[in-house]
Image (tube, rainbow, N blue to C red):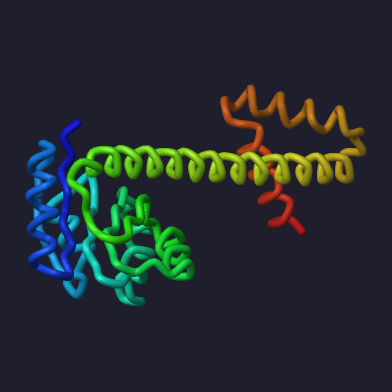
Amino acid sequence: MQLKALLVKDDPERSELLRQSLLEFGHSVVGETTITDDLLRTIEKTDPELLVIDSDSPGDMLLSRLRELALHRPLPVVLFTEEDSRAVIGQAVRAGVSAYIVDGLDRNRLGAILDIAMARFDETKRLRQELEDTRANLAERKAVERAKGILMKQRSFDESQAYHALRKMAMDKNLRIGQVAENLIAVAELLN
């Protein structure tokens, strides 16, 4: 699979080796930038599928930019560095780095490194979506429980009757039961 990579460089000589290796593996380098440049703007202009960073030691500025990137435009990130501190590695992974490679580039391993970074990014993305869905489902369940409580209090329904009333209204209005529950809660709050 050919990838469009943006190269973020710290050391021009080492970065050239990295650029050549990416090209040899059939990937394209859609742009090159430095750690001090506006990373988000460069990404918007070049539209890469992968961010490859070469940095002696990922400092606070780089990690901060990676956290910002993870919020606004998540991408797989491969970081080549000389820094082997566990604390820095942990910070980098929390900032969105998919592959953290210490002690340089072995051209023979680049393909596997990129594959691992892409797979890890995809898995992280899937887990985030699953977490988001779970949170949304939990919020919807809480709204349904709260709406049932309102119906039980206002209409003297038992729990089963309250649920069936919500479900019937959802079916009649072609809405999710959570949406009906939220609407009922909003009306109840307005009237109280």
